[in-house]
Length: 112
Image 1 (cartoon, rainbow, N blue to C red):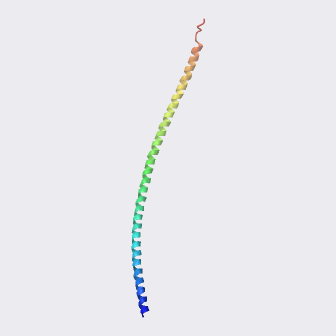
Image 2: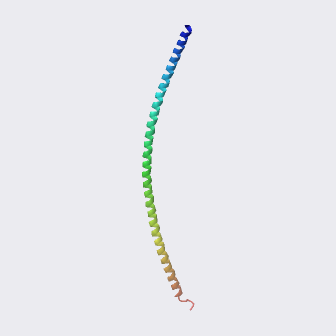
Image 3: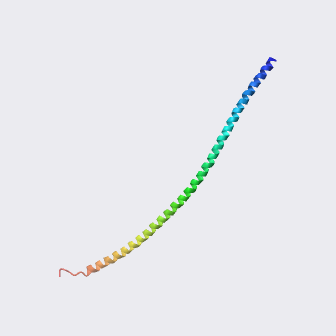
């Protein structure tokens, strides 16, 4: 009978210990679930911020691209104008050289 009493007492002690451990685990699980909820909310917020940043970057890139195209068009127009001016100067140079040749050929001899 004493053995049965001791066995019951031992089982009761184990059950209390198991019950306390179960409560501790349950509390820890509850806390971890709250941490997960907070992290999930943070992830949603960060994804939203990332989407906004990507949208802003795309908008800025479009503006930069437009500025680059405008600058390139200005450079091309300037180069075309410069090219046209250079050709005019070449033609003028050629004409002046021909005039110098003609004037040199018509030069009177100073030795006579």
